Length: 168
Image: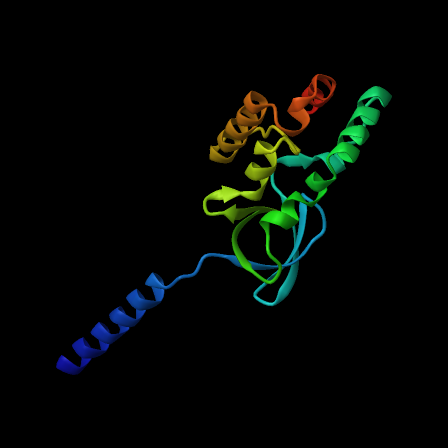
């Protein structure tokens, strides 16, 4: 009886120890393709992460000519915006992430703040509304409001603001 109790205690302690050390999903950045697409390795396997719920400036299509020309002029005037994600993510560094829909993920680049939030706050992406309102949508909307109030990125230009409004 005592031997059985000792074995049960050992099994219980091992189980508690393993559950306390459960690690979050970590991915190592191998390449920043553009502001919205990040090549990573998760457990040694390649994975391409596309930010969940946002559309980066590089990916906006279907604009009328005036808007398209203004967006191109904006990108020429601010070439460092093209490298925004590279400035915030370090190659061969691990970051916490949550995979949402296959290739889409939420990549936490600054503590609890995701890369998508950072892009939205800088005015370098557009928030794509989701059918289910969740905490992510709330954080994204808050980041867009900050960018609008501070007139950052695409919100610094009246023509671009009116063009981008169609995508929000």
